[in-house]
Amino acid sequence: MIIRMFKLRLLNAVAPAYFFSATAVTFIFHFCFFIPTIFQSPGISLRASTVIHTAVFLYLMLNALGNYVMTIKYPAESANETVIPACSADCSDKIDAHYLLNGRHFCKLCKKVILRRDHHCFFTGNCIGNKNMRYFIMFCIYTSCTCLYSLVLGVAFLTVEYNISFENPLTFLTLLPLSTGYFFLGVISGLQFFLVLMLYVWLGIGLVCAGFCCQQVLLVARGQTYCQMKRGQLVESCSSWKDNLSDVFGSHWAVGLFLPVQTVEAFSGEVAAHHHKHD
Image 1 (cartoon, rainbow, N blue to C red):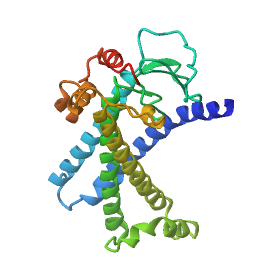
Image 2: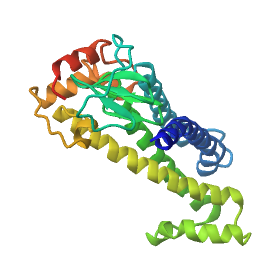
Image 3: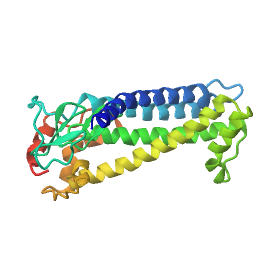
Image 4: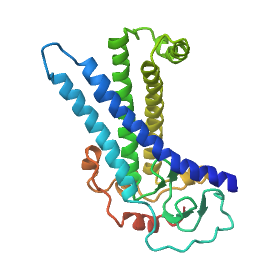
């Protein structure tokens, strides 16, 4: 158990560093390679397509980073409980969290009592609950869009710069193993090989975030959490799916779809924990 907790704490420290490193690399590729190469035109200093693609990328990236910050700024912790509680007798989460009563958990990594805990996110380094679930879902959406958009521009860059055709679907599937061999044989540069690696990183992160986002929205609509699903506990919510979504996304949810602003009342998490006493 000690070794397991050490691994979790190490992951809790490494994951945010990985996220910011991938973000910095994505910025560099877009502004130093993709946009200057794909949208260049002789005799024209600034094209409309360059402005549009730059604006789209910045909008997606800033929304992803903005919701990332909001997820951390508005944690799901309880402001009324600071004492470390004892684990209940029927607790099934004996590694990273203690299950308490009234839909509360004590997270060993955060060392705080979490209201309506869904899961612990290692990339943000805190727990996800009713208070920051809306920001976490939007973070997943915009991260997925940013990665898939970067994947498309990366493929376009390889086509323009290195004359690689992707008309055959097998080209992308065999791109990584062939590029690995060519790199060690000295046929391609390190930059091209690193770009190929990033294509698969963007694809993986984009698909995982999209799938995880769909799961979270479905759980929110049902009035459930991932902790409940992991314990095999199916809880029938007394509220409709619209009320469950409104409880998480707030009254100004439409604004939150496009801008990383606060749309959830500060006290909503406390109220939600009161209404869901039977976790």
